[in-house]
Image (tube, rainbow, N blue to C red; front, side, top):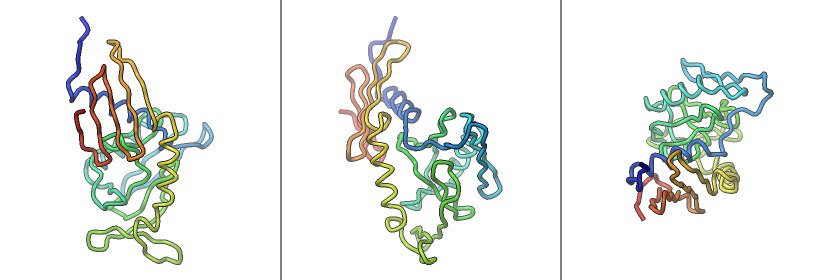
Length: 205
């Protein structure tokens, strides 16, 4: 007999898991089908294959993020556990938000882009991350990355994955996920609603 309702935890787990899998903003590899991209981070080498097998990369990213090696380039704090979709290579936070880049605190390189290659250099000044910009000048996050982030977010919100997703579970439960302009994620399962705000906080509606 089919369950008639979901708990708040079940709604959140299902919906955020679906958001993670559906996120269209972080396609990792766009090269030829026979090409493999190799990225070295500290003492560990990860490989993202454009054939769709991202298992090695996913294992490395998830393991290193859990150990606190990967920093949020805007806040300078460890991301916590990042999740990689093993079929698409897309990277998201635990709250299902897209990740454009991260800083590896073992070597202070910035990784990002379509193939998660090195795209910059960082250093910590006090509790704030700074980035090498034009003319080898060290600048803050907004100066170095904000324009690119705004473009990435715009594309993500305009995509089907970023704007609205729908799915039906094996039991016939209907799940809808929608992201608004303020970065909040609204989740609805069989009429029961929750919201994940831009800071990852859960609220029942």
